[in-house]
View 1 (tube, rainbow, N blue to C red):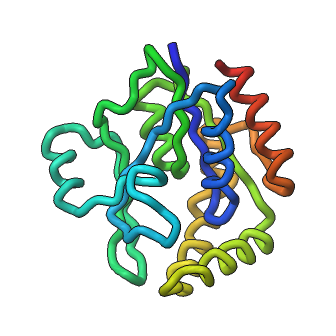
View 2 (view 1 turned 180 degrees about the horizontal axis):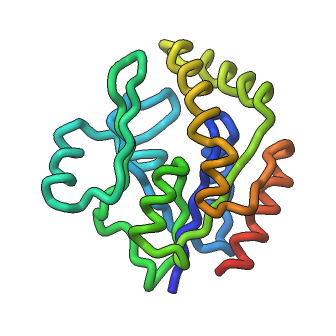
Length: 195
């Protein structure tokens, strides 16, 4: 039976970079779990890589067909953005291991859907000051920076990723992304020990 490895952490902790490095390791033989979002695509992103960028109509279609596993709607300064996972045929745990990225909330719902024994949490941490600096650096590179949204998300993450929520979901291992290569090596060892 395969496993789903699920990367989580506050914004600007390096989740996307870590994800890319792990996907590039042939010895891990991981397949992508690509989530969906209704938010606008960012500079440097491509549809089907980080997310499937879809309309509200597509979200509604999954919901009506009973294929929506989990969904989270965020009231941003630019409107409501929804992130969600759908049972769209991309996951077959009897054949492969998968790697995905999400929130504690989505992790809880995926764990309930696929079974606690089949999903392995990978929680990434970065010191808050460094995280804020990284978020600002990333936002400045956008054609139309959304600084208000960056700040809203930073503050929301403090509550969403509280120690109480992490403990409640029985996430015991945390990976500190101080030096990217060291963090990736530690996560690689963890994945291999779970496969």
